[in-house]
Length: 118
Image 1 (spheres, rainbow, N blue to C red):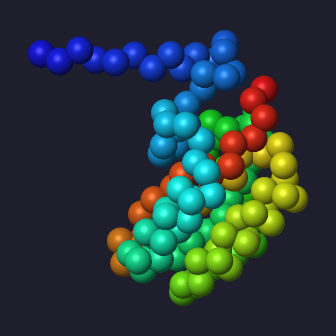
Image 2: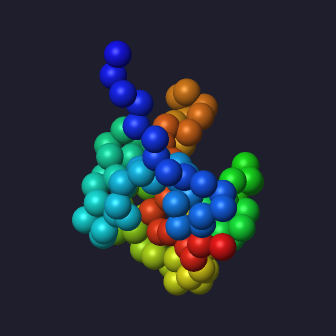
């Protein structure tokens, strides 16, 4: 049987906390974020930007940054909204969500800007 890897994510150690898709990987750079947005658009999913304070990271509710961008296919516009959210809330975690309107669920959700740990 294969060995199970233990990712040292502990509540007592804020720097080790893991959350959302890709949180076990290094933080995404601009090119990585762009690829994820391109993927969401290629799947026909509706992008949305959400953010929350680091102390509320594990809560189910995150603040929505404007309305979801229904039918938006301009990658630069989506990235611009994500950047605007990050600039307006520099200490918050910012999440990119792709809503699949056929399955009526989230197709993808990932933290693209990590806030300060508490």
